[in-house]
Amino acid sequence: MRVLVTGGAGFIGSHFVRQLVSGAYPSYKDAEILVLDALTYAGNLANLEPVVEDPRLRFVRGDICDQEVVTQAMYGIDLVVHFAAESHVDRSISRSSEFVRTNVLGTHVLLDAAVNAGVGKFVHVSTDEVYGSIASGSWREDSPLEPNSPYAASKASSDLLARAFHRTHGLPVCVTRCSNNYGPYQYPEKLIPFFVANLLEGKQVPLYGDGENRRDWLHVDDHCRGIALVAEKGRPGSVYNIGGGTELSNRDLTELVLKHLGLGWSRVEMVSDRKAHDRRYSVDISKIVDELGYRPMVAFEEALPETVDWYVHNRRWWEPLRRRWSDSYLPSAEAVARSAHDRFHGSSRH
Ligand code: NAD
Ligand code: TDX
Image 1: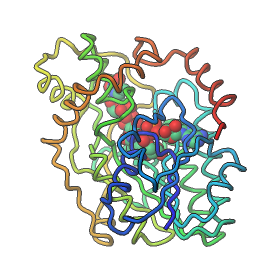
Image 2: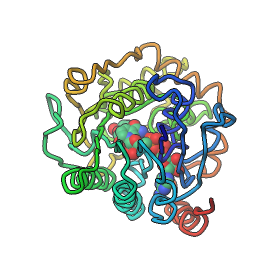
Image 3: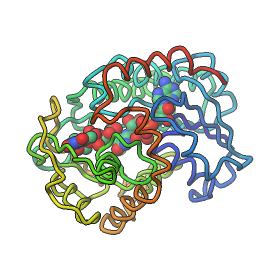
Image 4: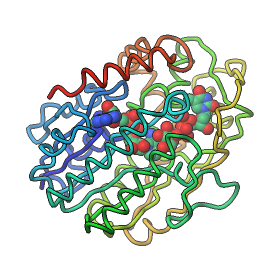
């Protein structure tokens, strides 16, 4: 069994790879794993450090938009698990072209190559953000797609391409749509690691709007176990929501983080809201529970403090990443442009 993992040097992809290599998914315990990752600002080989010596793991630095690289990588592959993406909503608001390029065009290149190579299964990792905001209740897999940010729209577009490649070419694709992940090795631009890093450096944390936007928190380990289940048993052509079951307002989550670090609300700065900030996400997970036997197993009450402590004890992991992006809350437009230039001109060495 040969598995191609795109984006395997990012937050969730690297967790999946570390678990795969360590034998956490019995059906894939003997799998050979090829990671294809462009190592953008979010990709980090340090995330694979714990498993780098394993002879079953191979790494190719390459861009999923590069047809030649992807065609080569796809050769002899049985299963594709596709994580690679531009993933941060705020960046998609300041500059969205890279999101369309990687998330839409890159996914198209992969789907095309997978058809040509005759792969046995293609799991496309998507997000609950494709459904847009929901005031009450939860989205089901057949709910309409109403994305509100350029990021969410690019992911929704890739979901539709995945569906079309199943319908048109019979590619055995499954799409997963998960809620907000948390855990170790998350790039320190996302809420939890960003806030923890700011607090540890004595800074304020910027809470958008009134802080009452709500997210459903899913531990990365539960998410990856759900993906492995879908890879093994998911019905081709199907979409599966994956949620964690811990819904919190950003204000409440911030309070929990502050409390764990022994800090008070004075460290919070209420700032202007994110554009088109989705008020609430919620996915109905009964399909993956009933069909595939999925259950979230990680208890948020224990895993949130563990996650915060991981960032406390692993400053050596996140400090260099923060230095690259200056001290501002968000990367400046200049830094984003510089990074995009590096990616276009310097990333396809492999
Ligand atoms: P991440 O930003 O941490 O990692 C993305 C990875 O993709 C990086 O290693 C990066 O180098 C790689 N990459 C980016 N562009 C590439 C390209 N053109 N070619 C090859 N590799 C490229 O993202 P993440 O949080 O690990 O998210 C993984 C997937 O899960 C994404 O598809 C994202 O949309 C989805 N998702 C994430 C969350 C979350 O809470 N983080 C929630 C729902 C869905
Ligand atoms: O500085 C901040 N202040 C703040 O109030 C940041 C970075 C975020 N927020 C708010 C915005 C959101 O309501 O916190 C919430 C979480 O923000 P993010 O960590 O940026 O995540 P979100 O926008 O919800 O998207 C995440 O979950 C779905 C991932 O980044 C996406 O890749 C995934 O698809």
